[in-house]
Length: 281
Image (cartoon, rainbow, N blue to C red):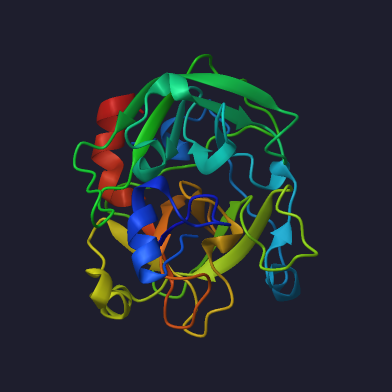
């Protein structure tokens, strides 16, 4: 079972021991556009052909301007995340567990983790109080940035759906990040994106029964045959619907793109009220 930490490693500090023991690896309320017309939200996904999507495709930050790189001074890039307002970012709780705000920096507006864009300090770290270390439930964390983001083509917030929003089985979503590509000739230094469909919840829970199943705060995405997964992204990174809503936060899974084991994401609609309470957005 993996936390999609650098999705490359898909292992997080949180699940290190479990992973070693079981051979697992690990590849997040926000106003609708109509509610705040003054804000220019990200609203279009790259028009990718299936051939581009296979194995993940390099993209420019302008194609996913909500994407951020969560970094620490010692390790550099450790997780992904998403811009949800001018001063707030959402990521996975397992990325921030047992850490403090000053341990992190957030790079925005760059296709790279190590250069370009802006590197901002984090002033507040608010992890969901119900985060469960053992089964990765309520895997949400909100980060307040030291300064407000000036939105541009490379820096835009992602829309967060209402708690009642329903994402249908089979609908195509996109996951992005700087994680493993499963191909030594491909660099993970450049932002990448791949497409995965929403997976049947009951079937997903059945497949993960030996790991405790999935809860109502989780949503699965991937193919029964495998081949594509959030190993193209990072823990804490975004799973985005074709109509530009943040569906999930990269959380955990078994292996990378293994048949019958889709990626598991923290369901954003389940945390909508909490996000609104903390950020007032």
